[in-house]
Image (tube, rainbow, N blue to C red):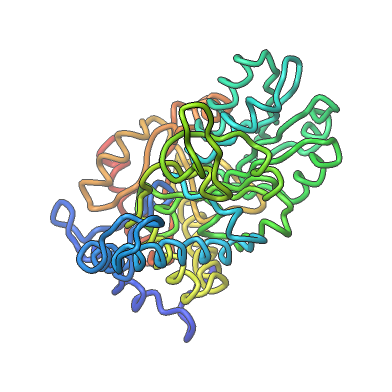
Length: 414
């Protein structure tokens, strides 16, 4: 049997777990085993403390105040913007727009750039493994503009057909919107190669980085993507805050998304002059506290080290995959050559929801259902899957508990 070791002087998972208070709680009189990280990650104390520090120490609105609290809040908010710039290697902070999450970032592009640039007969390409948030906005846009939505097929092992993708690209393609890491399968897509092909065809590319930002090194300049969106709550940060990166020249040419305070320079009843980037797209009072705490989350990742985190997560995935494949009647859905640290599976004769409920009774949190990827589930002719997704604080012992829990669950359902 293969031996998997993730303990090293540079990465002590048991020490790291101490930074996450929630991991010490009990569920149904059992120690919590949290394996739902693809839905949302847990938060370290540094993030929780950052929220508390803002509300107890310098709670104030930002940018327009001249008093001390407002200046401190503004400085902390903009420090988060700089931290995001560094985290994804954007060329400038002006290219970093704060949103509520990946979904809002994608919708922002669809409702601004899309409405301005997509016309009747134009084509938008997405993939067959997209989250609903990277399907529905483009459906709405295509219906409104009488454009065509094309879909890259998914192979039996859960990868995109790059041959089919090349054939879908035409001189009518205006945008390719693709996920970098599938939230339902764990597949890591070769987005750099796909971006280059799209640019050669004259199209722009939006990358859904909701799952990839926490697992992979992100360099938007190296990828050469035109847009990149991700969510704070999946990178150990708070809910309700996200990021849209866009190339500066493209953002400057796009129309505004929402009207209100901050996104303006001057307003009269006859005319409004809009603000410069990035404030042009940040109307109204933003989610100040959670945006400030996002920096604490990114600092936590950087301090821990993405390379060490990745090594640990790869070990967890390999071990879990090996153990799951030994369970009779269990089929893993998505066996791509390159995967992030999640595994989806079905068990013959059982419904994913029943498995999820019985695992929860044992203190084990997994996600069940279609994972907001109904077309993908239809592609595999299944109602949904059980998804176990791993983070930097998960352990081999927790994988063992999942396997033991599944054996008990199968006996109960048989």
